[in-house]
Length: 605
Image (cartoon, rainbow, N blue to C red; front, side):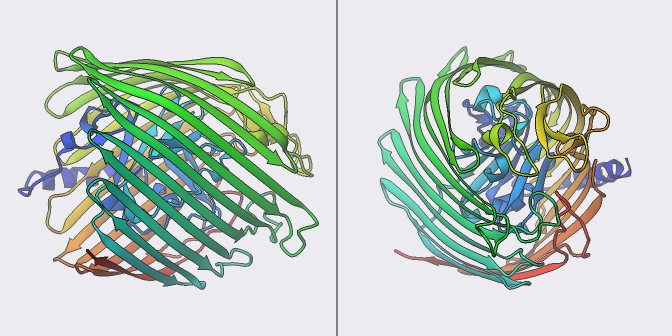
């Protein structure tokens, strides 16, 4: 509780200082969110949503999107490797299989396992913003958005520049990157390449990472077409990442490819958005790196999605409708050859009454080739109390199908369960937003009643893990989040949050559980980005994390940089106080880690 008081006291200090701001502030009316297929201003949202702007991201102590997410309240990012090599993300106490990640609207769900959701080759410099929707999102994005969804939106305003970067640091870590923006009258293109490497901070934690990214946008009168192609190739020593920490010689190599094309077609009152996408993931796991023949898994998954949706604007409100067809396949020497088809449709309506009440209701239907028809209704409401205050509430149902790993994986330590049924939940939440022109403050409370939740358990330590539907569990949580896009000349941005989650143990007495109630109980976040004169900038980040099944710990990261028109350098120091901690599977994370980098921005004609 002392951490909550600290958050409130610092919040009051900044609220008082904000009263004296005289510089131009951020206009939240002009900032839109895409928390559903209906777009609207950030200050009209009726959900727990965190928006991280690109200019904030580029001054964080990060080299990957995974690391960006670790600074967001309510999000639990558990890295086993570093710099985004391997990490699992969960929201509000859920598991890594209960979150959906989208890139410019392309769903990146993986039928094999949620371990690969964050294999994202997008360069941080080309991210416009990240939206984190916490709570029931199946009505908007589909069944995999069980506890929330993370939407990554890339930029379209990059000037004609050639960008070059190099980075080096402790443990033989380095990175080289290059990107070019090719804007034109009718056609804009963006291309990037990066190569990263490290000798590892302990035995068998070295890595090599290559990312390729392309985006093109063609403007045709009022219409537009976008193309996206991306590829990530990562290989790394996985000392203790999976199974027991005693297995120090594991190795993994993953290649992820994403291709998408979508259009924006304007017709009278409607905006139509047809979209096609394809995602391929190849995962090779070797138990003993020096002896691949001893034990090796190779999984190749593919997901193809065709979607056609539209939004219409009328005097009586906004209407959204759409259909989608998704096919998923897996070929594996362990899991076999598997296929799954999902046919979806949705209808959504949003209206405003008396300039006070906003209602948003909808229904989505999904037909699974494995389990038949499922319906996801939901309703959101917001009531304007004044110029900047708004009450909000939402209720929605969610559902998640077991992954092919849950159903069919088998080795000496794990035995899948082909009789697993989908897990479901009904979530209620409500709270208060305060949103003046440069500030967002949200206080909220949620309850998630889960049914038939999937967990891997075993009756004794020597038995293999086995997944089952283990009845119900109720999560309850309080959330406080404050963002200030500062107008002070020496402070650019301030962020703070406090999250508390409690749950009821659903595992039978005497059972060992791998995932049940393995969540963050208390989470405190602070981040401040400073500006000293025209050139110097600095970022200070603090995190306190208290997990149910692990020791709590505190981390401080700092970053300093200096910027000119065409050149910048930066110095990063992660884990300033050399804290010893683990995030998952008893894998020790690195101590103090120093890195430095240079970036060049070269305009051309």
